[in-house]
Image (cartoon, rainbow, N blue to C red; front, side, top):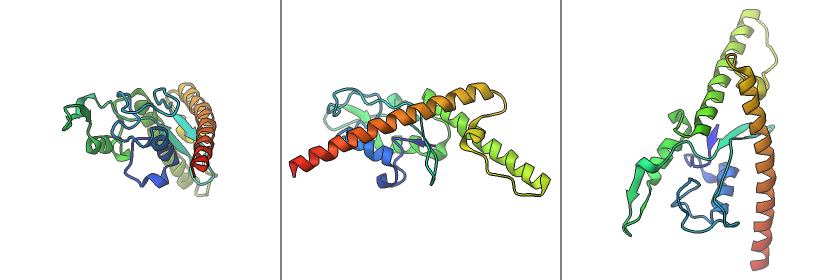
Length: 184
């Protein structure tokens, strides 16, 4: 469960963050939030990113664009312009700070809470039966008991967004690599 703006881990660890940094031309002063960009993106459009699920054998990842709205943490720079404070953003975006203020963050926090609850119930059931039960699939983990249809709809939308975003990221990365080869 990750935000693109969470840089608590090294950027090399999070390919989505590396991609976002490349896509923004490494302009990290405005990051991937909704503030006006200092430079246009590679496609001259605002960077957007929906709640996405990326399945992988070595770890399944849910990613959102950002956890918090930054309007209340703007800092006055030496040039007289306001910009989001990097330290405040890092603190708000880090995974251990709970749900943020954006809608995607609240939805992802709900999925994360469901996953923890379902894992706990599964563990309890193993203890009760005194035998090892098969591990739960990610889908079974994130679909809660209160609103299973709604949670399943959110999960399916995140899967679709992840597949679409993954293809777009691959195309962009191939294009950027080709541009770098031509410049060398």
